[in-house]
Each structure stands twice: as C-alpha cells, then as structure tokens.
Image (cartoon, rainbow, N blue to C red):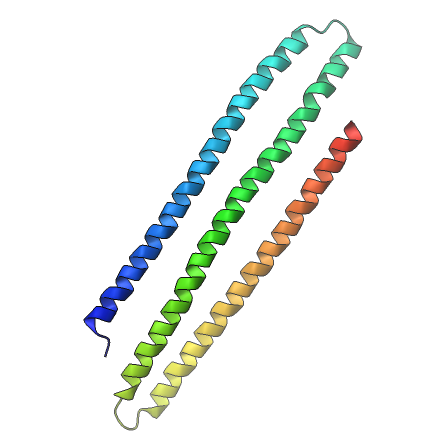
Length: 177
C-alpha cells in the first residue's frame, strides 16, 4: 500500500517541478522581452537615421546607394534577432526537457515500486492481472521513449534547418556587399 508520507512526498516533488518550470519559463520570457525592447530601441534609432539619410538624397544614384546602405545592416540585424530568439526558445525547451525527463524517470521508478509493493499483496490467482499491469507499464514506457526520441529527432531537424537558413542569409549578405 502507498503510505501517506510517500504520497505527500510525490505531491511535493510534483509541485517543486512545476515551480521550477514556471520560474524557468518566466526567466525566458524576461530574456525575450528584453531582447524585444532592445530591438525596438535599435529599430527606432535606425529608422530615424535612415529617414535623415533619405531626406538628404539629391539624385537617383544617391538614393540607390542609401537604400543599399540601409538594407545591409537591416538584414544583418534581422538575422541576429531571429538567431537570438531561436537560442532563447532552444535553451528554454532544453531546460524544461531535462527537468521533465528527470522527473519522469523518478516518477516511473516510484510508480513501479508502488505497483510492485501492491502486487505483493495481491490475492492468489491474480497472476494474469499482475502480468497485464506489468505489460501495460512496459508498453507505456516504450511509447514514452519513442515519443522522446521523435522529439529529439525533430529538434535536430529544426536545428539543421535553422543553421542552413542562417548560412543562406549570411551568403546573401556577403554577395550583396
């Protein structure tokens, strides 16, 4: 039988996990908000400077030169911003994933121990039910592992895609120079 102390400890661990995840999420939201505020400040300053440069244009050639001078840093800043946002979300996901994986392993161990303890006191003739419960636990664990592997593969694919997009953007910026 599960003791009251074990149940209370499991609940406390779950609450601690949720608080850890909530604090990590708030810290990441704070980082993202700071990034957005700094980006907005830079955007306003750049727009002001660009507007001044455009007002000083006297002919078409100068207009084209000013547009190129404005576009190149804008693209570079856009790529840098997207990279920063990606890093914030990636670090956030990785941190939360580590917390969840750690607590999932603990939960799996505690549930298995509790079920084994309960099954020791099962009445005679309940071997089929015991086998079914153990089989269900094994299948649930296998499904979780498959899901976890799929998520890791998806993350790797996304990281490769982002790296390729950044490389392409850097190549385009180099060609524009």
